[in-house]
Length: 203
Image 1 (tube, rainbow, N blue to C red):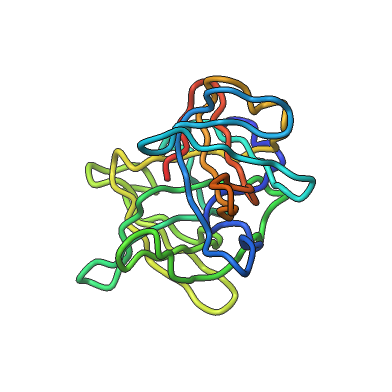
Image 2 (image 1 turned 45 degrees about the vertical axis):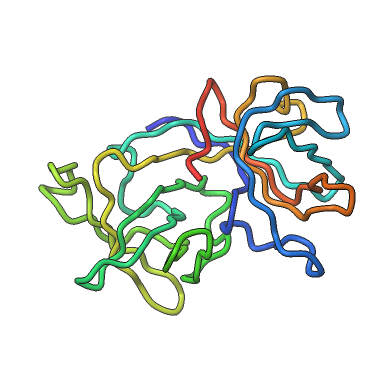
């Protein structure tokens, strides 16, 4: 498995939240221009100006595979409930060991209807000796107050998280931004996830 970098995380996975007096804004797109204090990114009908501060948390990601998911890893996954009581993963983030416990637990993820976010340790992988089957993987995720069963189908985006910094915020970089909308229409970022080597943040 590829070397995991020391890291932070993106939407819903960091414990910190956007400014309490403004609903959080979530953007995903590519940086069009950057000046060291912020950047302009695609993210809708028109470019959006994003401001960064000393409190902005920046993380990187690399594309991973289902086979990189192994027992004992601490992961975060956005998912939706299935009729049988399990959860169907929309993406999986693999944390480095140094970030074990970040945002641990199970909570709503309102970016999707009935969406959930689970940050927990993989205690079991169902399949042929834990191998990837035609239907993907089924994970048992255990956190301090309980556990969830999460089905990860083939094709689900999987990423390795890593340490990030403002030097990564360059033209063409693909980013996911969480922040608060300012009165001037710009977004002050609380968290930024930056794709490495062309990787695209999954959510």
